[in-house]
Length: 154
Length: 175
Image (tube, rainbow over all chains, first blue to last red; front, side, top):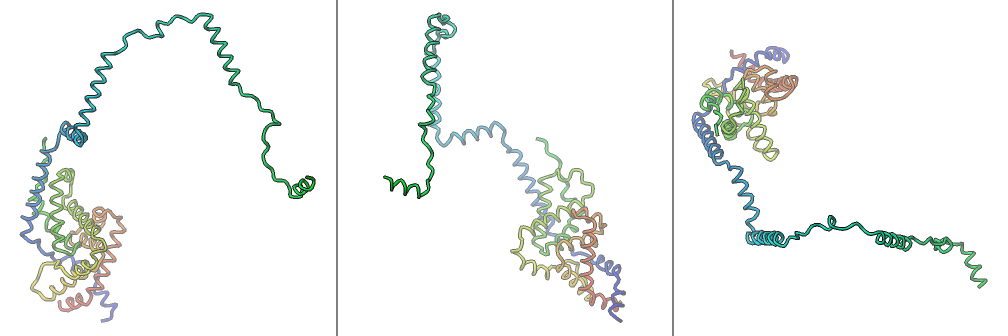
């Protein structure tokens, strides 16, 4: 029988059938209880976790206490200071009417004086135009020959 | 708070554990891993009963869970367990024992040959041969294109046939 004939005889279809007919090993019987009890335990854990799910209020409480717990006295002191400041502010509050409503319109003399002051101020702060000739010229290097001539003439 | 009624675990186990066991054992090549994964699947079902909502084909759904769990396990292990994989390739008895020595030898050789296939080919072969799924179903279950499923199967079967030819021929002649 040649290789080719062997190949032919071992047709794919037969081979597949042969493989498909191999029965798999049965699952060990003791696993049933192990697997199911583990699943039941997980279910119990889930139920108790759901029952003990914290409410929004208790979560807020917990968060706040976690925030304030490290230095409760400092927080209490700060709160007391705020309260004292609030009380003082309320007790000594200025009850007089505001100036803007009570103020009389400025007199003509006052307006004139203000305008004069304004003019004077404008003159004072007006920038002086610096003459172009006085501006410092930027340094420009000159040829050495000119320098030498200057030295010689000096 | 009203709880959603979970799936009937006992019934699910009795109806599908055998299939899941065979599939997981073929994929992981390790009995302890197979048990752990089987347990993981049932725990997952208990913890998320909503997973089963709208499931029409329980077997396909469970096999998909099993496949994902096995792939996760293999990824977690990564390359650090190559030696373990090599050992596993030789080892587990995937098939039921038989009193016929030729048949026994064939089954042992088949288990070994399956271990030499890459897991993705092994998964396709298993689902096609032992779950009797169509390529379309296999592709849908493993989230791969239909052509990929078909080609993986063809390559895998060629390898198996090559590997098992001597034994297979012997048995054919004896028959």
